[in-house]
Image (cartoon, rainbow, N blue to C red; front, side, top):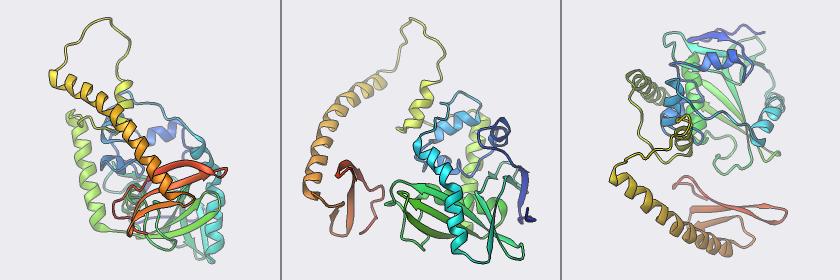
Length: 302
């Protein structure tokens, strides 16, 4: 293996994902690159509430794989090889789990290290797969979904490196590359947020309950057993629940109608736009509409 001594990285070990050793390296009062977006409330898979329970050693829902995760893992080596084919003079190697030299709680597990023919390592490579590319910018840019940008910046800050390449495969055939440079200001914002988050775990100050599904699923796994008893709850919380139930049905009907109107406008097109602003996009399977999805950023332009 190429000698790799990043400026601020300390290697904890090389672990197989999902093994007890891998889980141990990520457990306890530390923040990994895949967790920092949750700290900031920017992750689509976890919330500050769910991550807080994990770090506090409280019950959390078990990880459940799915076809997207499975095929992402299966295709990782192929996508990495494609990047290598496009970059003469570079080599790639898998690496392990690292912590920051001075901040033991800051950890990262990059996909690959990228080195030159002389064995000099200054860059990282992250490999991603996605069924859709609408959240990603054009190839050659630095426009990533915000949660992946957080991940990459955390990795660079942990190891003390300045550059990360991102290789993306969309829908199994659309290959794109991105280059992300280290941003010291963003890194400081993330470090400060991570330290404050870990302090709330130490103080036992649970984050507020939000509307994320990860939060609800975490609450679901907290009670153990069932007691046939009545529990008095605040009137305002009861009213909020009952009103939300009523609004949910009304909103569901309205959303269905609104989606139908947009699909009728789009016809055989792909995107619904107002001027230069993208509103929603249509995906198709077997020639028929599979879904209509909103653009997540208000500033996405055609």
